[in-house]
Image (cartoon, rainbow over all chains, first blue to last red; front, side):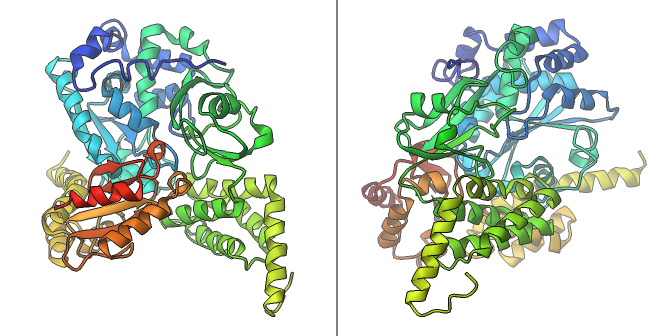
Length: 413
Length: 148
């Protein structure tokens, strides 16, 4: 399937500091159409019919979420734009915020109108503070042009915590608490920020909204596969000739992205979806990029044949152990235990039982952790054990042999 | 709503300013001292323990003194694959401290950080709020020279 420009349509074309260039290119027409010719219920129905799913990683149907918030009676509702792009290898939201903040603002105006929110928070990660002026300038210009009426859009800056990209931790962070995940239910569309109905959408999801409203749900739902509609941005990095942001129709193959477009060679494996993403070995490169298979946030990191699997696993688990918020035991203790085992394996002190221990630990963390971080933390571990078991076993055998030369006890292996 | 309920809502909502207040104090004093943490807790009517909890939760907040320039080199996979360790070495050599330390003159703090979303220009680092990408040891020298 081909490359297609929808989200990247205005990047590099308009001047992100000047709203007039965006309006001349057709910007804010979708918002005017929604505001002047559609009821909020019609907007929600249109998004629901488009079958748009969340682009931040979880992939929940956007319209279903909106409908729930729309229908929940409350004196106050909130919209939050999740710009806490902390996933390892992800930078596509940065690209949108830099190149086209206006489409995002248009999407937020439509979303707030649809669910009935008067206040919008953009949760911007601290690492992206350098984008703040670009965004606030765009908001200011939209306000001056009379496009926002009485809608308040505030930028809320994070302070360095990966877990705050998780929606319940993000709300705690806005409420001035530690960024720890919450127990669910209740879910945010019924009880979110300060207990009020809240919709949290990723930058890319909200930036897709104007295109759906402008062209119609029918047009949108014809793009992509049965369960994955539209286009998706991919952040490609690692062992590629041309790292960068690419936009593809959902269902395109991983090979098309990393080989044809980004110029990868001698691939060993590709991680799709960031630190907790699936590991795809070179022999499965034809895998389509879609919600049915593997997608996540669209972070794609390519590893060539020179890379060491255990080194990769160690770095990934170290990251997750550092970023675990500490609220629930399965993730807090599990990631630490996993790190201990993996560092032993990577450092040449592994024993045969370690693989089994990792498998057991993975299974229990996946079912008992409170949020996505702990639930998915084991994916890179279990995927590499599945596809690259030989790398683990060879390392253990070599380690046992080397230890025997040093005269150390051979222990159980 | 009764007056009592309203005042609870006001107190609860006021806490949304906490992170920004902590950051302001850190910008003014270089770190979060005991005094500023308790002052902020009082001004928001929040328990000191909880404010301390927040101050120590986030990696961009520090209860220890920091330099005027905070260098954060990304150590995540995409940067690591592009030899971020060479950049770490270059910085360590140039300013004479290891990651986790601050120079005695209070000019630089040096840290390793997780993914900063600049993987397309790896290896990358943050110097205070600014991103520097496609780093080489040579570039490090000129970037640090510009810090006065």
